Length: 212
Image 1 (cartoon, rainbow, N blue to C red):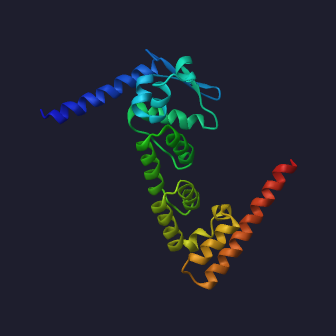
Image 2: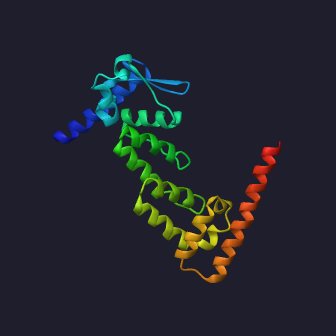
Image 3: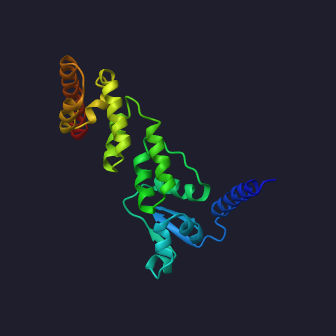
C-alpha cells in the first residue's frame, strides 16, 4: 500500500479520534464562551488550526491562564461551525448563515473555512440571493465574486426586479446598477417602479410592526 494511502488513513483516523474526544469532553483543557454557550475544546487543536488561538495560547495571556475565552459580537452557531471545522476539516455552510460564519472564520484566521464560505456563495447565486451575496462580497473585497454577481444581475435583471428581495438594495445601489447595466430604457424604468413598489410595501410592514 502506498505511503500516501497510510497517511490519508491516519489523518482520517486522527480527525475521528479528536472529534470523539471533544464530543465526550475528554481531556478538554480550554473553553470558548459565546453568550450562554460554553464549548469545551483542546488547546492543541485550536493552536494547530488557528493563528488567532495560537497567538493567544502560546503567550502569557489572561485567556491562556484562565483556560477560557469569551467571544463577543459573534453568532453562537457560527462559532460552533468553526469549532466543528477545526476538528473535522469540513463544514456545511448555508447561504443564510454564510456571513456570520465568514465573520468568525476570518478573525480566527481559518483560511480553508473562508474558502468554503466563498465557494458556498459562488455556488448559490440566484435571483433570490444575488444582492445578499454581492453585499457580502463587497464587504470582504471578494472582487471576483462581486463581478460574478453583477454579471448575473445584468443577465437576469428582468426576472430579478420582480422579486421582493430587490427592495432590499439601497437607493445608492439602484443608481449605481442603472449606470452600469446594458439594458433597455424601458426595463430601467420598470426596475425603478418595481423598487419603489416593493420598498413602499416593506416600509408599510415596518410601520405596522412598530404600531403593534
